Length: 206
Image 1 (cartoon, helix red, strand yellow):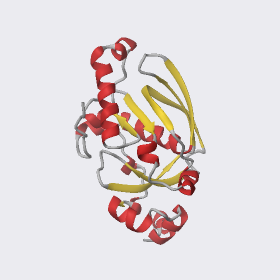
Image 2 (tube, one colour):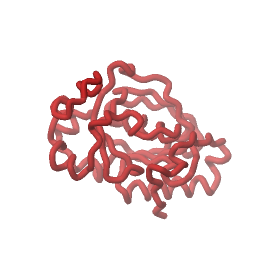
Image 3 (spheres, rainbow, N blue to C red):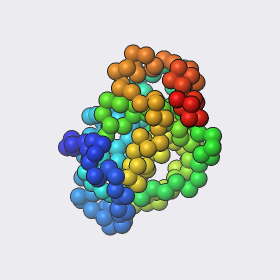
Image 4 (spheres, one colour):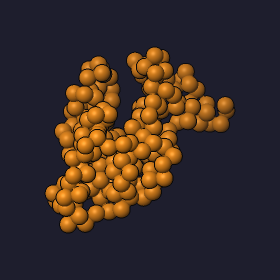
């Protein structure tokens, strides 16, 4: 079943989601929710979807980065982003154990969100993360991710904490997807930052 996507301004996106017990994870309602979230993510299409985005304040997210989302990028763009296929999987009650590089030297790329329809912005994220979570069977999983997969994990885990990418973005880089595709999609991030004068803004000169 395709679920309605909550958009920015909906209070559920700003709440810390509730953790689930193993019995809850295995229950029919939660299993049906996971399946509906998978269908909704594919329909969007997107690479991740957190339960708060469909109105459920629960620590569940589904992730998959496959042909539907990878096909619009060139091999060079995929390599630049450290982006490779990620099979479908579920993370429940996730915790980021550590990340690299530290916050002082993040990796920056444009990022979008199904709950901020039609917009993208440059968001700094750690290049590598280790995440401990439960899967849809209630089993413990340890995920070590790099590149774009690490970015997806950080984005979805933020959703479960009531955080959106606009809380982390370079504010001057916020733009519509239409204008991103028209002007910026083929450009390297350092060039985009230079044209948008992001470093000057960071230093308080604009």
